[in-house]
Image (cartoon, rainbow over the protein chains, first blue to last red):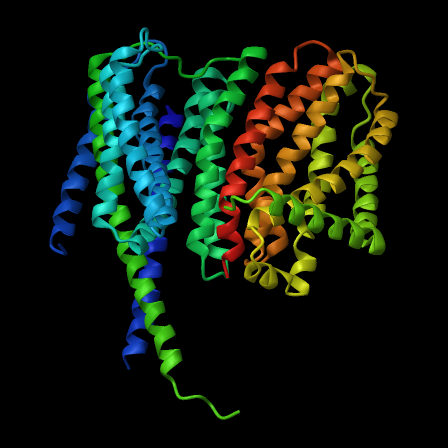
Length: 38
Length: 286
Length: 229
């Protein structure tokens, strides 16, 4: 049973980590664009 | 277009929650494996999604390589059409078909390959097809990682081993390795023609996968080992839950790809602007 | 892709002869690779000390991993000389077909790696007390096909890695995943021949298929890679 929850948790952890990197990249990009606009 | 995103996001969230409920609660418990079998409802859709994304990368890579040359482009167009027609004919002519494969799925696959190819061709310019290639490779690797993590977590309690070198597992691992090397090439390349080099690598990868499949098949024939996740028919209620989960994960993958694609396009526009600015800047005195 | 047949072989031959001559005169690549191969054999021998029976089971894998490392060292310096002297730019501008350059490089690498293998093999036989129980002559096609499989893709990816940061690590990163079916075939064929238990025929067929598929792919795509600035 533990394996079942571990598998489902692992799936979502992997997806959330990836989405987190996307968010961070987007923030960095917005900062650069704002600087460029100055 | 922008307003569609949150609506799609909400729909996906609802679908995923429903699919999760179906997988954990509503689906019938498997006889021999017990509740652990429910990992199957996450493992298999992730695998199908990953393979679909890698296939999209392959199509985009081919398109990037051939669309610069009108002759090659035409030849490829006709080859794709020929593949679709051949699939339809083969579906109804080849008898008997290998175990578990329906004629309709062969024909549909052929038509979908052609459909995907021409859809991408129509809605993505050559440069945007390259952006889509990066996106599908990255998201494909994420889903493939999920497959490679959930697989052993399912295998261990059920079959007692974390890993075995059977066709599907090994092919998935090799595909994952090839696409990680693809992403590394993209990241570390300093060439202005990175998309061309990466596309070449993707083509090599696509040529490699059937060879991997065949090599492991020979290996297994010579060294029989425990079979993981044997074939055989599936309970229709389980199939239903599986398909719901697949639909939910496809929508989720679509969302992620869409976000990543927007990020990629923004990044490219930024780089172009920066390059232009550097050109237009007055020369500093030497 | 060129259509003229007389010119490519002339150019290929000339480039190959030039490479071999340069290498013979300076001997820097071959010396370092030689010493590296010797070190690999010795280190492996310390790590594993099997009896004759066990060694026949594992030698296939050990030998090919050692050859793989030696090949990577050889491949890494494939294009180094060209890059140093801007020869690649000159080649891009010349009317000579890109395939000839690729073929010359690949053949040159093949000869280098083959020399290494010829020198490493007696050492392995000695350290691991190897004796083939199966048809030993089959080891020759396995060695030739296997080495070509590594070298043809290695030369191609070495060219791809030219314009990357961390060039030396990029080559194995790109080469190893793609080479997995070939490696599997080489190792299993060698083990089959050494232990005499199974037939190596299927593996030899697979290796030949791999070689044909990827040689064609490399020849078709090399021009694009050469012109990538």
